[in-house]
Figure 1 (cartoon, rainbow, N blue to C red):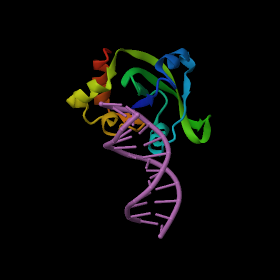
Figure 2 (tube, chains in turn green, red, cyan):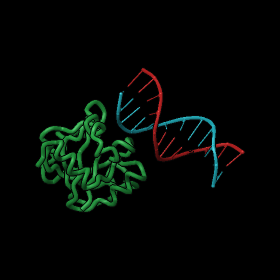
Figure 3 (cartoon, protein in one colour):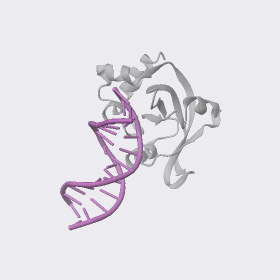
Figure 4 (cartoon, rainbow, N blue to C red):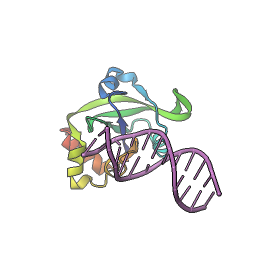
Length: 136
DNA sequence: GCCAACGTTGGC
DNA sequence: GCCAACGTTGGC
């Protein structure tokens, strides 16, 4: 089981909106970058991803789960999208500043390739961030 | 609002 | 196929 991180500008698609979609989830659209698309296509049903808010917030705020693997993006069928549903929020969001301050997370793609909008997360990184977010 | 980092495009 | 120019993302 792989872990992932999905980035979103909260003005465009926020965690709150994601939660409001309920169990049926929502399509993760708008990926227009080959590297990000390749990660999207590697996502398997049931795998989990961090939901990261860019912009003013810059924090991982919740966890989503893949409920439908890659299919044509309904906003541009030349690209791919997956469907995700909210699993739960972090008890306390984990800010980018905290991630950068944690030596054990220095290798995180979020730190090293800041612009990549769909990223793999290692199991170790996943556990550390969950712990920092107050999930046990 | 600025700009570094990075991806993409297009001229050669 | 190289690389300069350009556009975009996203942190600061």
